[in-house]
Image (tube, rainbow, N blue to C red; front, side, top):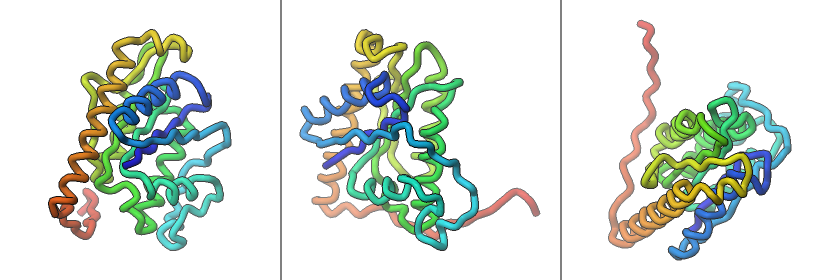
Length: 211
C-alpha cells in the first residue's frame, strides 16, 4: 500500500509540506508507504477545454501533468495539499489538478483515481481553509473516490513551517487523518482478499437543463 501526498505549494518545505510530512510519518507507523510529490515552481497552464485528451489519450499541453497521471497509477490513495491563496487553493495546484483529473477520465484512464481514497488538506495563516477544502473535495466527489476525514477539518495554521508545528490541534488532526486513511486502505485490502467485488460501473449519462 502506498499513498501519494501532493504538495501544491510553490514552497518546497513550507507550511503545506510540514503538514504532509506529519501525515507521512504517521502512515509509516501504520505500515503504509507514502511519497511527497512536489508541484514546484514550474508554470502550469490551465485546462483549455479542447477535449484533445479524449482523442490523444493524454493532455495536449506538454508539461509534467501527463507524467503525473502515469505516475499516479501506481498509488493506492491520494492526499492533496495546498496553501490558501485568496480563500481558495493556489492557482498552480488548481490548474494542475483540473487537467490531471480531466485528462485521466477523458482519455479512458479513470482507474488512476476511481475508487481510491482521497483526502484534502489546507494550510493558511488565518482563514479561507474551509472554502479551499470544499474546492478540493470536488475532485473526489466527481471521481467516485471515498473521502477520508480526520477529527476536524483537515487544516493547519501558520505563516511559517515553524508556526505550523506549534498548531498542536492541526498537527494532531494530520495524524488522525493518516490513521483513518491507513485503516481504510487496510479494509479495502481485506475486502479484496475476501472477494468483495468493486461497484458496478454504468455508462455515463450527460444531460443539461435545456429542453
